Length: 328
Image (cartoon, rainbow, N blue to C red; front, top):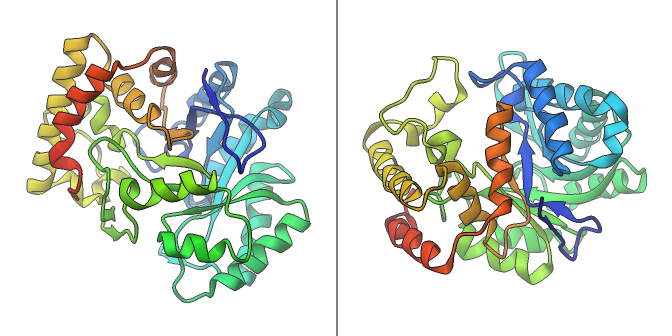
């Protein structure tokens, strides 16, 4: 496993991280025992970053991760990157809330579900226009002084707000939507994004030595070779809520994925490995947050660290990706 080092984080971070959204019950592949097996195998293979959030599975993803890490003292071998600021009610209506009062409650709830006394990287999941950044930073500083969090991250934030937040507290990590077909996306699941990843986020993380954790690196399975011939998911799968997975827009992304699959076949590499390899070789990318619903998928994800695309292969891939540089 390749590990990367950035100025803002003391530890080296595995180039492949594990995203735990699919472990909470929102995806067709969710199954607790399999998820725990994947977590344990990932650690054995050198993964030391696990990304989760309270809202994933309405708290269940954190519970599954906490249960897995409680065994054999595994907690001290990894970095937990959880989130806050996206709360929900009983009917599962979500709301952005980065208020001091809410955050101080959320951290304790997450620590309980994760069965730990601290979270390594605590990320504000989405901006909250109704709460001043100073108030959010005040809550985070209280948590740091109490030893409940170690590093602060911002997810899906406009870069002007990232730099403003840095006036009140160190911002050590950023997370945003990024993959081959969504390079400067304007929306995620229909939610407007007030940043463009390659154009705006990359220069900032590089300037300040922040970790960068791209999420949805396989575009929810499309860049792993799924759905090339159409959607095959059940009605309760969370991907049904992604507007990009329907209509004419999906056909465009689907055609791009088919071209990438053809090139992966040409160079004799699995499509998901080629996709992750291309992302991993970006200088600004620290650890790719990828889901793994099976041991086989996990092995393929990690195997992308054992070989490199050549400059010529990257150039050919980039030719395929030209139409997607600014597509949403």
